[in-house]
Amino acid sequence: MRDFQPVQIESLLSRIPLFEGLAPDELARMAKGTHEVRLSKGDTLFRHGDTCTGFHVLVYGQIKLALSSAQGTEKVVEIIQPGQSFGEAIMFMDKPYFVFAQALSDSLVLHVSKAALDEELQSDHAFVRKMLAGMAMRLHQLMTDVEAYSLHSGTQRVIGYLLHELPESQHGEENVVLELSANKGVIASRLNLTQEHFSRILHDLSALRLIVVEGKRICIPSVPKLRKHQLA
Image (cartoon, rainbow, N blue to C red; front, side):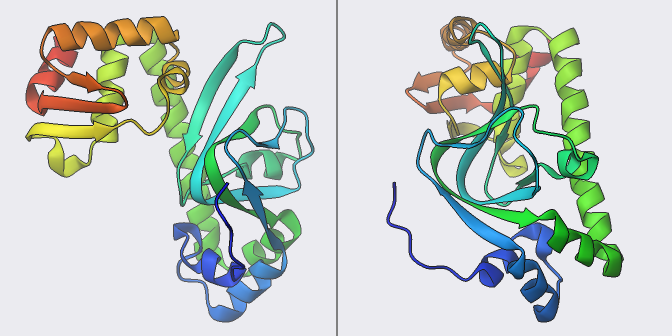
């Protein structure tokens, strides 16, 4: 785990997209109801069934949200990246968590209490719209996932994931290098694939010379050709 230094919560909040535009006094009020949670890789932030008392914002690191069956199998629902918030919907519903959250790398998370949030929501309509937009985007992503699981082949899902990870500016380029943001088992679960199936698809795409796999680095000789194969 990295050596954490004392941080100013107000300063951290001001760097998160959700809180951009808040006045200093508004940030100060939010900071009073916010505390830091420092996690080492593998630490659990919350478990299925835990009481939800607020929502979280990831400052740095990476968090997976996942479901776990009684048999021990795991389904990754989402991989949270820095700047993203999560847990808002459960907080508003006053329900316990139905997923668990685990750090995929050393992470710093801010927990914003529901009490602090309620006060801000009553006075700042722009902030309300930002929160609604964030939850709407997450719902849209979940619907996109359901569509992919139902209508797209495993190969199409893997290619779609690789293309999604690339910046828009690189979608027409040649010889692009992509660093996978998580290990292959986590990504496979996120795509509703077994790790073996995921690895086999990467091998098949390599055999077609559409990608070159070097550990967590994926080299794409031609992004347009890879996209064309997805649509074939």
